[in-house]
Image (tube, rainbow, N blue to C red):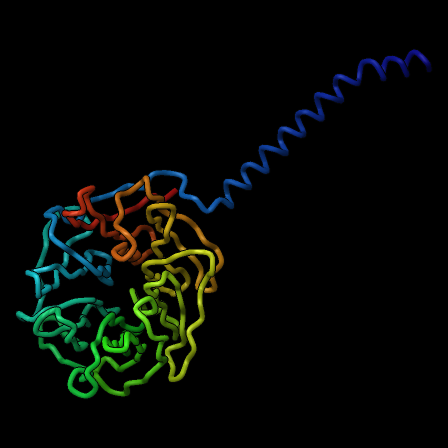
Length: 327
């Protein structure tokens, strides 16, 4: 019995230590994998496909409902903007779709691809109304803010079913924005809310939250909000630990795409409408993104990629890119 006890004590100790070491190593590896799964950073450099390459000044992009092309505004001269589309296949072929010679800005397309909405006026000097354009047909101005109350109209966005449009009324004198809902035919205008006065509180980007009855927007102070699309609603801030500079919903309204301040640059993230589930998609050193105001992105219809505005190092050339393969 004593010999057996000595044998077991002397011989099994190294084996026991090896077993403990192997078990500990496997535990650490498992924890590391869990950390990797929970990490909110993009793991691989995304694939970037150039959609435009002529260096024109381009802004405010939306992907067409069938996923074939992107809609955006392009500067014509120092007072006018036109609307263009370009395929998502990298062919670089732009098509001008402006209905006339005015300025056309903040474009959106309805879920069937049959109508556009945008801000329009004689020039870009803060004298815009919201218009709806029937593709291949006529344009209808659906607001009259300039003539009735001297307000500017900006940032229109179709609802998930295309029946309504959310937009911003801006009072430049008091630096006050109002979020308004109106039927796509110009009927039944509803004042959702009046925001706090001040340049920092002005709306920077606005989008309908997918198929829900909510609207999301960012303010120039870097705050992200959601608000019910009903009269007298109160905006609710989404997240409190970040500075956001644009927002775009996916089709279902389950994910929000944002540009977020990261050090001296910007990174692209997705976040749930309740502020949880943050995931970093693109970090600053992976893509030459714009500064705070002009980081403009939108989802592909199936959520597999994003269309992003970017610039060269000299900040003189502006082009769109399709970004895929985030991880």
